[in-house]
Image (cartoon, rainbow, N blue to C red; front, side, top):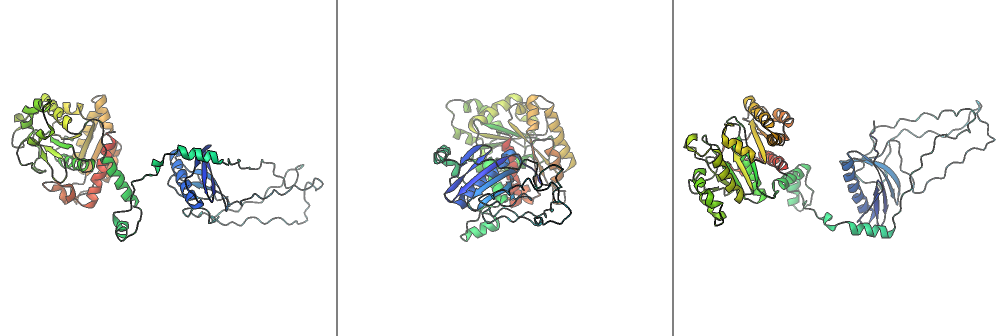
Length: 481
């Protein structure tokens, strides 16, 4: 059954361009010929269909005729099964029979017009090439019922369908509309395809457009390239060890730094033998957060310089972010894990970095953990495809949602990353579906043996794994806006 549409538009095309009227709003087209104007009109109508969330009924008046069709939000177009292209000039209506004609026919056979053949409608050449042919056969209409006694024969008592008059814009209206349209709307950063078969063909001189997958990848890159006013703190949290918190911290920091232009730091705030320093490059020294803490007051003062932090952080030469390590050789009791220490270190990092990713420990009862949540703008909840790790993620989200307004917001806006633990483990799809119902977004990461590398580098991963992490990073940035 055909969907109906209450949204309507009319198109006027000529050899010099044209215009579109959408729900009474006039839009002049920039194109200077009928073919380009048709394509421009279709794109405008497609966007309007997307805004209203359904098909738009269109009446297009062109040099070759008048056409009625529908356009969907995805840009597909089709003719209603009962519509045929109308000629450019309407055919005069057949006059009614004279009043002297008897009201009812006798049984003498009369010659009646043949019913329209039950065939599908083929769009004329003037319609856009993307317009599909109607697939379903049109059912032949039954013969009209005999008019009631007293009615003039052959006269339909229903009001005839008369199309609304189409506004013909004057030249001054077209000029005024064009002056109101910004020329910057024509600027686009969409270049030809770089990947896949299209990319290979383009390398030989063609200019093929990117595929939907490549366009999605470009959109994700745009998202992870965003900048915000003021620093953003992202906590990577799950109370269960081995849930992929450290790899998630490293790869998200790499994406945000490489595409966003650096100024990103990953901080190992795990006082129970955090391994962030083991999975990343060394900066040529052994400094940890314990070395930075005594210098916090100086680094927050007016004489401190950004380069002073180089004595405490470890720059990643390939992935372009910095690391503030913990000391895995010391016990938790020997490391700065109190609330005051956390606040001091966070204040220093927030002064010098635009994005702070915190690789957290497993003890959610520590005062530093609560202080971290207070200063967090978004959380990432990693898990692997094992029930105990997924259950730990669920408990964390549930606990945060019950902890107060800020915790509830963090839980609702959380990004859950489900990594396939091994090649023999099930796909992340099931847990992705489950956590999509609990959090704002959930993304699955396929198994990749390179995930166990030290140091862990983004470029060492397979193409599918990199695309999955890029999607995870893009989902995270949506929670920061």
